Image: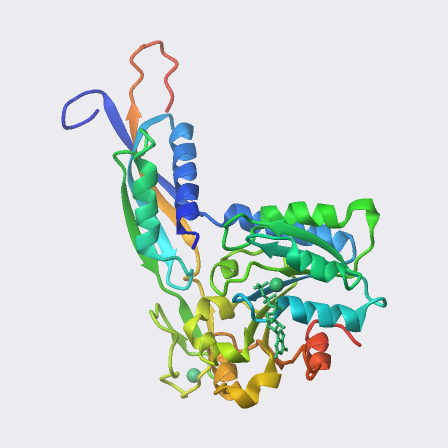
Length: 128
Length: 226
Ligand SMILES: Nc1nc2c(ncn2[C@@H]2O[C@H](COP(=O)(O)OP(=O)(O)OP(=O)(O)O)[C@@H](O)[C@H]2O)c(=O)[nH]1
Ligand SMILES: [Mg+2]
Ligand SMILES: [Zn+2]
């Protein structure tokens, strides 16, 4: 499966974000993985652990994964079954058995905490 | 200032909210525009290894050519075999060998599309035969107008309930090798019901490339006429 290459994609994005902010290190990394994304969380974080060992900028980072569950809309009555971890067996309102899922199928970087190195030169051209 | 040691480090909290699939999705849209500019339609075929993708393509090409001009992008981990099978039918074919990757992405398909359109050849219909894998290809939009999932009778009718991620964004569900129904406990009802549980609008066709049964339905699902 492709969890490792997705973790590489995450590392690339983190390095880009770190460069953009002129950071010295990436600390906390918050990622959201959809329950319907087909991505195996354990394999993804395992891949990231391997990759970060080779990246000084990521070495100290901590990966936090939250699962994003889809919402299912009943195809018969429109009732919403929110944040369901399984494909619903039956609609509780009308007993319908067909559903339109929405969300819960992506892999997103939500938030990143970075260490910024204060410029020591004191040259007055400090970046914000 | 860093609270712990006063070393002069500061911390910053960055809101990102960005999908790691966004680049692939954007390039997929570009593929779609490229195909539309050439007046063609793009179909992505996804199934487990051996469900009959190439055989169904051979039969489809035989039915539609020369009235419809067809190009095929073949994705495999190794070998040019499937592309050679397609070329033998008279259709244009480009082979992508992923060298291990379990799915095609929009970048690979983009390059293959340029090769396919070389020499300004006109095409009405372009098929992508994805790498044989019922899971991974579903996460990668390639720019297709139509996404077709194939499950063959020997694989069992529990596949839609076991692989909801694969079925949820599909347009067509083709149950293939239906000539084998007498020999397997495959329930068309179960397969159809479970596919619709996660995708009420999915079109379901039953087809055998071997006996040609259901070929007209399949071709109709592609938006074509025999
Ligand atoms: N009985 C029967 N056999 C079929 C049918 N279609 C394909 N097969 C057989 O199934 C096997 C696999 O068919 P392919 O078309 O190569 O399958 P594929 O999905 O392209 O395989 P990969 O590209 O390796 O993933 C071959 O031995 C085919 O002859 C069918 O309609 N009926
Ligand atoms: Mg094949
Ligand atoms: Zn309902």
